[in-house]
Amino acid sequence: MSEKYDVAVIGAGAAGLMAAIAAARKGARVVAIDGAKKIGAKILISGGGRCNVTNEIVHAEDFNGSRNAIAKVLRTFDVASTIAFFEELGVPLKREETGKLFPVSNRARDVVDALLRAAEGVEIVTGMRVESIEPGFVINGSIRASRVILAAGGRSVPKTGSDGSGYEVARALGHTVTPTFPALVPLVVEKGHWITELSGISVDAELAVKSPTGRILQRHRGSMLFTHFGVSGPVVLDISRHWIAHQPATLSANFLPGETFESVDASLIAAGKRNPHATIGSIVRLPDRLLAWLAADTPLGRLSKDDRRRIVRDLVDYTLPVVRDRGFEYAEVTAGGVPLDEVNVSTMESRICPNLYLCGEILDVDGRIGGFNFQWAWASGRLAGISSADAADVHR
Image (cartoon, rainbow, N blue to C red):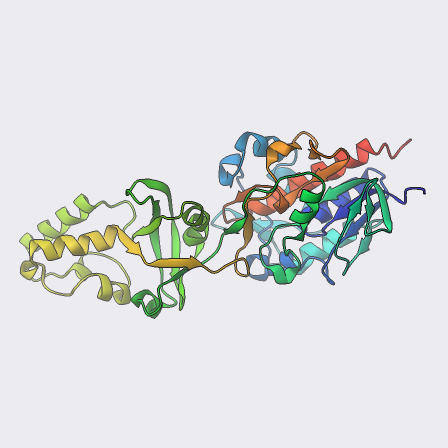
């Protein structure tokens, strides 16, 4: 039975579409298969519907995983290349103050439409879940290919089609899968805690994941948003995977980033000596509703030493009563997956199963918030597409 395709791409999200485009541009006959009925659902909801395509500065240190391997892949398609690629597709990007790059149009739909236009010549099959890949790369008993690119994504936002089924395909082809869990995910606090009464308030905070012995395992600073269920915002999303990965661990907040217990305590003592009637709220700049819970409005001159020190501790080292994360339904990316050491990162070809290539979120790579995970998708997908087409010797 003759082969129908040079390359079959399983999963047509960001990495899969990029892989399909890259392979087709090399002259390969490409089919892209996706379980969702509509292509690009996760791209469409990213960045609040604007799609944070990448970041102005991307380093391997922005990711969790094997950083030497990640760096090697990222070097094959850097930020400048990404900007040029989307410019070529008619989607110019703009830089925002945070360093994030968005379409000038602020429309994620433009990104999806441009990718689909660029995939001209790729046969895209929607609504087909890959149930089996038989020897010789016969997919679901009917689609044949000489090379397969597994770009099925992880488990985040399963309603978009990334339900984790790609992991079973990877296992069936001989790969291992490290434990997967939500990353870039909001966190839930214990029911009825005062934090939930501050919904809508945002503060600059430094968060620290601590071991049961109090050792700081990870620290991030950024904007934290109080919500009706707990906490969210960029700094919470960034640190969430570390809190989850290091359980049992605690998460503490310094609401005065850059300050220490000693510096704040000294400031309050000095202020009290100058003006005993001054309150903590007149010295510490925080939202009134937050201060009302953390710091009494008692004049400094009337605070006991123990009360003052307790308030200072709450301001710079408050243990957030986190009980769980919000799950894959609200996670922006998946932590864990197929280990990078099972892939030749020069080509993205599997070291376990010849002629199989892997890219995107299915691999054990997750980046921080800000467009980094998309950059990994573009770079790893493009490399897999080019390599698979070259290996298929499409010009023979």
